Length: 79
Image (cartoon, rainbow, N blue to C red; front, side, top):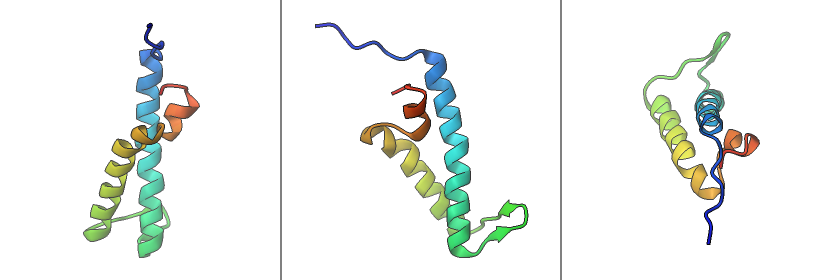
């Protein structure tokens, strides 16, 4: 049996960087909107909301590949 072809390394690296940045801002803004920590420039999280945001961010980055891939992994076919 042959192994399935792996995606190009550049696709995997670009997908990881885009997922990292995009998910940080989306999750950060969502937590800020829920906790009322939005500002005119975006959001500012400190204390417990910041811990929640980082926990959700790590959960997304580590957990989504096990469920089929993160957003940009799927878009760039880097799964």
